[in-house]
Amino acid sequence: MAQQIAADDVEFNPKIIAAAWEAFDNGIPAVAAAALVNELPNGITVSANDGDETDRDVVFRDAEVLVEEKAMGVCPRHIAEDHAPAFIDLNRPDGYVLAADAGQVFEEYACPQA
Image (cartoon, rainbow, N blue to C red; front, top):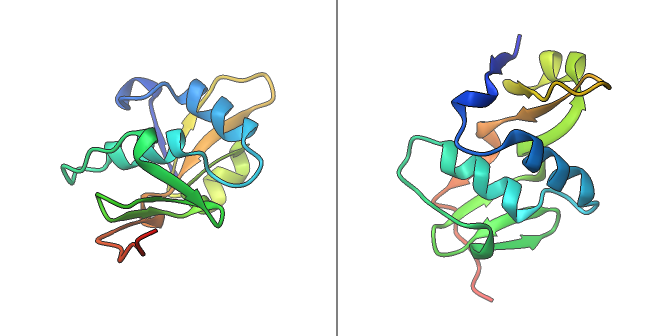
């Protein structure tokens, strides 16, 4: 079962991240990827401006971090509970939550140079 994370326990605004993710129709937006990377306890800090959206994923070349599209998403609560390691309740009328999977963030990724 997925771990529910309180919205107050993350550094980003989950409702803004969810809105950005839903507005982007070709994969995870760099702003969502950056928010997830910056939550990891690894000391890596990235900004959305550092991310290249490519192949429905986001690559932070300088930090050598790849964020797969599946690392974050907005979905019904029961799907997040069954399939995601963690989720944040957005208190939305439709019951959708922000699901997150830190296992889909790959550090020391060999980023090809553009």
